Amino acid sequence: MHISVNVPTLVIQLINFMILLVALKAVLYHPMVKAISDRQGRIKKELDEAEALNREAKALKDQYETKLREAHTEAAGIVAAANSEGERRKAELIEEGRREAAFLLEKGRTDLNREQQQAMGALREQVVDLSVDMASRLFRDAVSPDQHVSLVNKFLEKARTLNVG
Image (cartoon, rainbow, N blue to C red; front, top):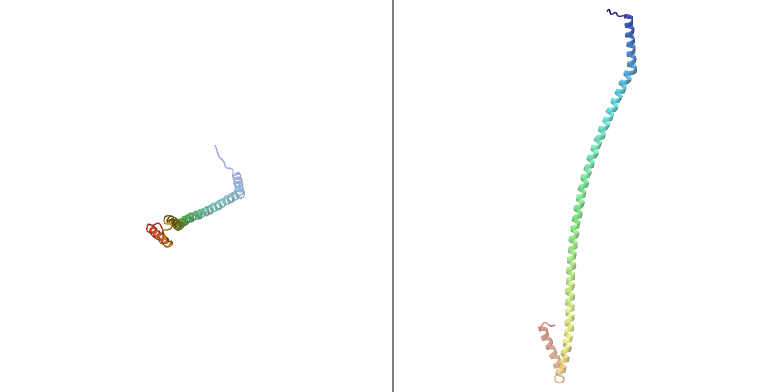
């Protein structure tokens, strides 16, 4: 077996290979490299955008948490203020009730004293009338009018000392 190399065929095949290589490089390699480079650029850009969105989302989350803490603090302050106001109003109402009760008690005492004085006055008048009537029946002609008034006055003095009037 003998291998022989045909030089003109080899040169033609090398020229064809070079032409094919140049054509493939121009037609496929450069567009492929450009497509890969564009894709890498898009991927890098999308990763950068995703990272920026992630940072923005984290900032918004932090801002939301801060506002939420502030809202909780404000709500606690409002609740504390409402409790304080409620306690203050409760104390005012209790004090107002005490004052009104004291006023009503004093008014009741005053009314009771006035009614007691009126009753005592009415009782005194009845006692005087009854005394005069009894005395006039007992002593019809035996006692003079001056003596009669003197007896009634003594009776009234004695009644006062017995706490009747």
